[in-house]
Image (tube, rainbow, N blue to C red; front, side, top):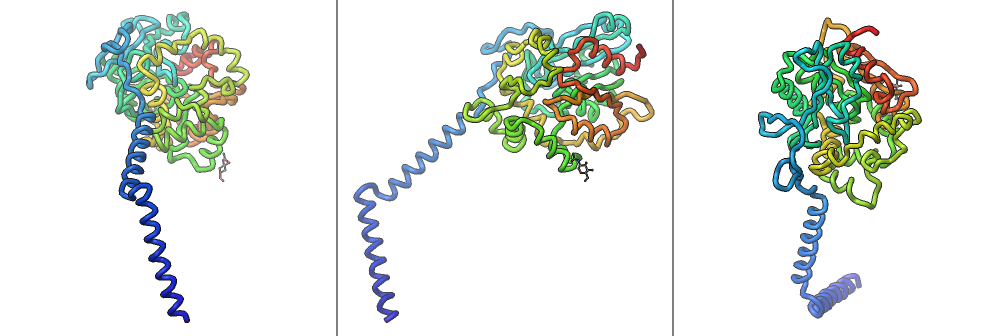
Length: 371
Ligand SMILES: *[C@@H]1O[C@H](CO)[C@@H](O)[C@H](O)[C@H]1NC(C)=O
């Protein structure tokens, strides 16, 4: 009984296969189907590859870019770096400060040091466009280290002497860690002003980075997550229209606290966006996110005091109402690295250095000058 039913089912299976073969051959041969699927798959892959590719940068001073308007130096690897000098002439200066701009900014966003203070203390100021921004050539190999080395080379080509200060604001503050790691022997001191931190620095306890990450707007959690885990999707993510992209790129007001909104008109008055991204948004904004939130080759939380025996060489300022850069990361860093002089500003947002007199106060503290 059992044997005969097996025979029957085997026969019906053969019939079924035959029917299938006939069925498919009457519409399309299966080989053809496979070919078509393959063509569709290759087509889709090529299309996706094309839409996620950033366009080539329009390099300043080349036939498809805009003319050069800035003073520039040529770096060892052939890239140009655009710069801007202010304050007292460097020959007369007692202090030289190099300013590192933040995300979506440029050399014209140098923090506002008053000319009175520059005269009083003898301060020479130098700002530059970070690689890819403004009129500085893009650096496809950009890293926390490369920007520090660009700064050193800039100082040497402009004959700043053996030592100078660095001040970095926001994403520029994050780059100061690279200066402390790689060129601390060239520094008189450093200031990190509302510095961005990277949730993936291994020294952060999981609960601290998780808490900070969750304080971000949902769209920024996605934007930095994409930059960290799938950097090759960063261009597409921030240019597609289906999901909200980075709130900073989108120009969302939610990221500004009440005190930020008071100084915002000053920032609007300094809007250099067409200059900032004239070589394309990928080499400026997107590469900044990829490097800033990528996997770093060192952990700032592991740094030893680069100036042992010298009090107060590294300062950090952060506002308690900073909605852009979570303060809890800074609190953890400054607890872990007690050689940093930490200035926590109650009620201040992210843009506090633009408030009247604040940048002068930062410079005074850094140069250890009393009022
Ligand atoms: C993280 O965990 C430690 C140890 O349990 C605790 O002391 C600290 O307050 C926590 N921090 C945050 C931000 O949750």
